[in-house]
Length: 230
Image (cartoon, rainbow, N blue to C red; front, side, top):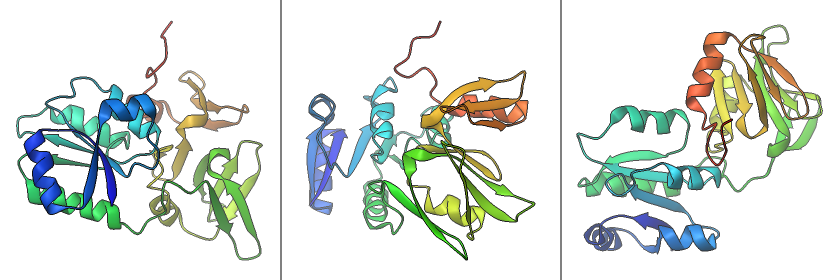
């Protein structure tokens, strides 16, 4: 039976119990006791006036489905999608669409967020690397291969195309797309340098990015979540 954290109307909970085999947990108890192995979270924007809870579960790689009305702030919702913080957004009274969304989520055949390592497969070698060690992934026009750069500067080559690699990693919220051929690990981000037009990661690895793309990156990042701005 699937376990879902909720901050939704009690009537909707009863309807979902009839449609799905699920167990519900209150959001407050989940955040306080950090219940492990929760499968998803449903948050109603009518009750969630700030973004802390969405950020909290996103950082834990728990899929978030938000409920909204037709007059909701679309710019706010779009920001969640750009940051890959939510899985889906459904009108709160569209029960069957919500059921469909949860069914698709639970039956998605993608790499699960539980995986901690990837196997890089090239024609002549295979390498195992931890997700947390990957600094950025980009497509190299010279080698015509997808390059995976680690924290220690080691570059691995995959025979898979960039779009295929991106698709396989879409379940991991730590990766953010900077441009058409580059994914970065936001958890290893250290500095955004507009003057030098570059990103510096933990371990001092650098990636040169145009100023306009750096601006887009900053807009899609939660730089100030759980941080003090000086």
